[in-house]
Length: 289
Ligand SMILES: C[S@@+](CC[C@H](N)C(=O)[O-])C[C@H]1O[C@@H](n2cnc3c(N)ncnc32)[C@H](O)[C@@H]1O
Image (cartoon, rainbow, N blue to C red; front, side, top):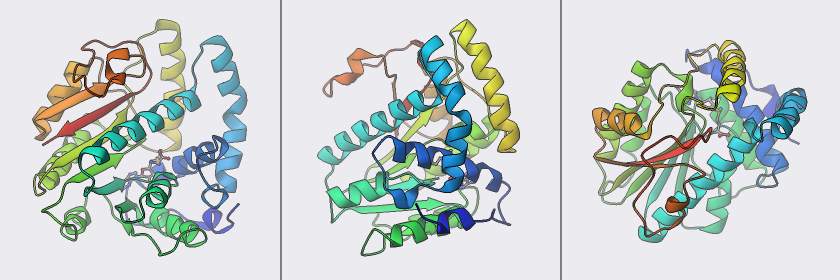
């Protein structure tokens, strides 16, 4: 386990810096799930995972779902859609924003040594990731320090090849913002993606939980997350249609919503995805400009 990861302090510049601690928790879960490397697992993450583990185990036995089951679902769905995208556009560039301590970039760069896979996060988290990966990856990957709400994001896009497709990935990010901030973020992403020959955005999203008993528990736990991350953590959407409309308003032409229990979306050839909320706690959205 890397000691360096635990010595990171919050970034002084960004008002969103308090969200960064959540990346330690998810980073540790990826390690526990066997899809990451010990260098990306921090003591802070292990401590957080230990703290919530009894609640998670209880939720899994009583409700059948927990935070970590949704992490598994969203990570696998994003990987699946990314694989499909890469098989269609092998020369695509990947930019994973708010990457935290996620192992995806490391895994994909290992699998495809010539792949352009850049990661970005707030300065302190980016520095922690760079340091962790320096122990396990050569040549050193590009891990950029970028606040998505600042000018640095456009500057980063200008360093990429606009004649090639670009896919931007975010995971575990969008629920931390108000709807207005989300519209701002998605508009920035759509504007940026329009500069490329093909521009796609892939993200997970936690919709409003609709199973009654579960909904109450989830609302209550989300309040803890909201306080701890000093963010606007909320569930903004009840139906896939609402998400599609929000994406359109931000500048995306076409969106597909993938729900874990939607069997139709398992089929790569099928473009049909369910138009109603199927009860899953997490969805994955793929939007094209
Ligand atoms: C819940 S963590 C998710 C990390 C990783 N994607 C994962 O799934 O394990 C949220 C991440 O968003 C990053 N973040 C929050 N606000 C940001 C902003 N304005 N610009 C860039 N990154 C941001 C945090 O630093 C943190 O790493």
